Length: 376
Image 1 (cartoon, rainbow, N blue to C red):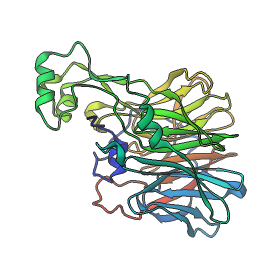
Image 2 (image 1 turned 45 degrees about the horizontal axis):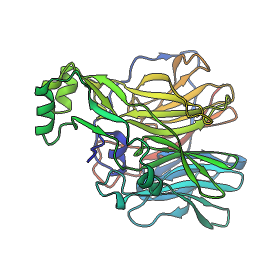
Image 3 (image 1 turned 90 degrees about the horizontal axis):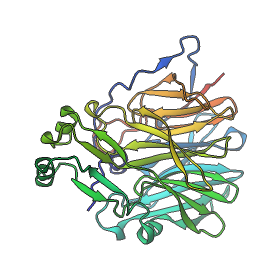
């Protein structure tokens, strides 16, 4: 059975995770640190947002299973409530239609418990189911042929220890059945879905509901330091390479036509393992995937401006990063507490902040906010 050691797995169950730590060094532009304006507060786990027509803002309160609209007077109206046991995620708007994801059972050892759907809601509140994403995982398991865990250089002692300690990472394994549809981007008749459980980006025909796999993200290998091995409860495994699972957390379509995908590395977000998150680029026509930038702490959301600049929410880095178009030069756009998602509309960046408090006991507190800032 696969044990996915990821931030998203913890978020999906509202488990307590490692406290925030400093990200890798980033250049801050002291000449321009934009003013942030709060649009709404009192939100529970606002992990995703979208900007619709007339600058309307849709936000998910994931753990509360709510899809909400932020009104101009800063009030919040709930437009959809998921059934008990389900969360909502990955909101996107096109015209008058709002697309979103509804999920349950992520990380469950029982594949039958996996549930994940792409849905749409119109202005009248009518909801329709477009696709069953968990069923696609059960039938295809896109990363089944991908190997994770320790490489061939790992010692027998390391492998034996990993097998003997209940909380140690699996020594070696292939991608198993898991689905956690987490983010979506819509273009024309196609919805692209980042599935954090399947380690893949999927493509959905929004008319027929047909689902296919665009690409599986590659494993994220890391040489374990002594501190990292101890954090994983495999202390005799230092200096060996471990291939963690990739965990896609957001997908956006860039002006170059490629998909931009944030990826958390598998494993706990602890200083000993370093900042290992990344942004991948995927050719949506061929599935060709390449690493664009890495060394990001807990990247959970991104937005691509018309200029090609990429903005990334670093949840535990407590900052929104900016990567310049094409070359990927990194700078800090805005230091904010626990940002989970970002969106660009024109020259305005919208973000959810205070989205997750790792030290708060469940249920998650209503501390989340939606803000906006000028990108000029």
